[in-house]
Length: 287
Image (cartoon, rainbow, N blue to C red; front, side, top):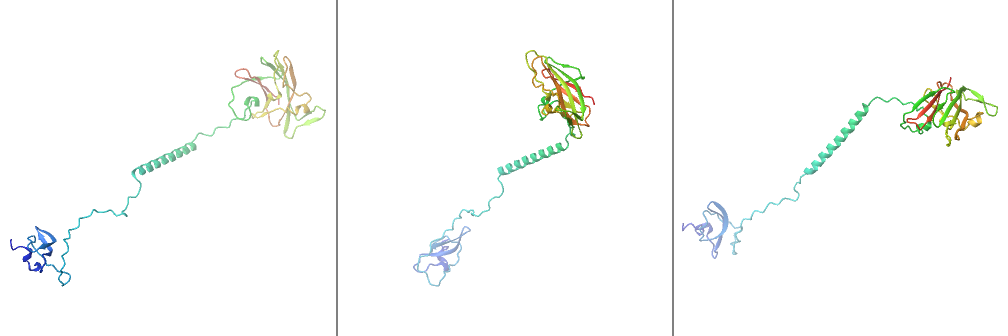
């Protein structure tokens, strides 16, 4: 072992005045390495010759031993590929929104299908045959039940407050006016003249029974109001029963204009609005 030193190798014998020389390739215990060694070093098992870059002998100190660089930690490049798409919460919210939209569309489709398979169209309700005072105007509103009582001409309809009588009712195409001339109905129309009497049975209170309460109804359930504004100028004795004093009566003629094709006409009058249900009186007009 004393001869196994680096200085005994011809290739690595130090030059004059050099204490160290370079061992560019050495092995020890099976591990390869490079180092600067002295001539009496026993660390080399095998040697490779040192070949300097120039033939000129170097007079400077050899470079220090270069230790193998430690492996640096692997740095992740800045331009690394980043994950794409939605995060888990984003996917959950998106799926929930899609489910809600689908449910809404399904509900709308079901409603449309139900409307298409709805019940048959209801038959139109005929126009009310009650006077405007009973129906409450042109807006259709649920009307209470009424008791209808029929009376003959010259027959009194009696209530605790009033007594109502239809003396006569006639259909004509012309009649004598108040000033002696004749009034002729328009083409296709007829006049209906109704003689009425209303008696106030109360001893201390007045009652109202205007002509507008007497409503003419035809067989098609259409109603006709009296010509109350024109009656004083068209007929000899118009009915004026807006206010009837206690124990007094009002009599006169009420005028209507109807198509001459209308038959089965009736006069109806709200006889007793205080009873439950109210009572409506009706009189049939001869053809």
